[in-house]
Length: 559
Image 1 (cartoon, rainbow, N blue to C red):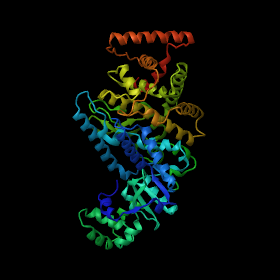
Image 2 (image 1 turned 30 degrees about the vertical axis):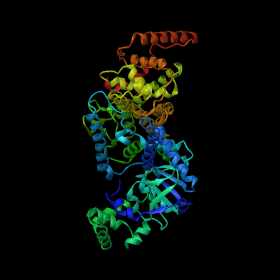
Image 3 (image 1 turned 135 degrees about the vertical axis):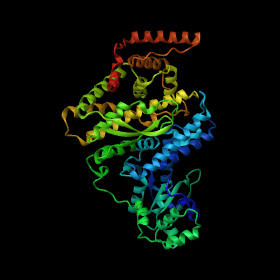
Image 4 (image 1 turned 180 degrees about the horizontal axis):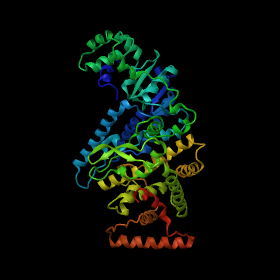
């Protein structure tokens, strides 16, 4: 992130700080950067345990909270934690390049292990975590930091700079070197996460833009950074000389610095009272889409999170497409399609998604609302553990689109993150994540739509409200999204779970594949089935013949 080479050029001008030096400062936190730093902290904890595993989302968010609480202990007050609300169009090339890089990493791993064997994907680093920033944003919303955590209209770093001006003495924690180029009070400090150690003893290295400017004989670091972009190989002394004489009225310079002038737009959707509460609970992908759907006359563009999957199989984002389409239809009312960036074969490409006609919107939402309610009623009747309600529903979504259904045993591994070193598990996990995230996408879109249409059409309002009420029972990312290679997460009685998955297969009109088992395990399973059957009879549990008919609506786009 930031201007290439700027951090290296300025590192010699950094200062060491003690906790006493920074005591009483107000800390503004770059949320997405904290999420990635917390991943590194969680990895370090795993390394000391000598267990060949990677962290879970829960492990990572716990490290982030630990980090924030430690700041408070040494009297650095956390006053704002900011997350991206919608990235600007100028970031398009950077996003595409980053996704291509992720794709290349996964392709490399697949090529290195072309057979069914797949190691724990430690080499992928944070690429394994498709929902890292949203997971942290969600965890903070359920912590003591909820009231100071915000989604902002744009990039978090821009608004960190704006906030720092308003709350002196202030400092920003980030890993974005661009933050050195904004205008700040004289006592401002910028600290990079990578240069900060909070335990066992706090150690800080940071930057004072005003001190560096004084040393360089400049009023701002912007001319220095501008000259660096023009000639990356010049020695520092020459760059300083060029910066002192740069033509600050030239169009190229003005184009360069406008990136660092943050001017709040009072008409921005994020700043309107009508929808601000619902927008604060959104993932960045959802808020970006909604802002496009409401404010733009062009077709919305969706950058779907990059999923770690088997590149030789169909994209995991095939699953849940209907759910995302109804989400798009709610907001992109002036468009007939949206564009999704997702993997196709070995590359990430733009693919058009045709929207539902406006006249069909009510009927489709009605069908979704009624059938999801029926699904939840069935899960209550069957005593389905809350942690499995939506993963089982997502399994039904995935099964519909698979040409060759997996065995139930593989699903048991996926649902408990019991990594079996196969690409089958890696890819099936990605498929499950795509279905679950599509549900989450719908949940958040419906919530915002309701906040904007309180006086809307009564029938549509009724069914959207019903849908919203039911989807609210979805758990957080830390509970629902398990990563291949993390510590195993048991999901209760295996035989009950096996039964439930088998019923999902039946509803989806998918035959359960025959799995080869030893005589011993077959007899054990038979005894368990008989025991369960007796227990059901004793409790008077009744299972309807059409329990899983609720999944049939998923086929609406295919009939």
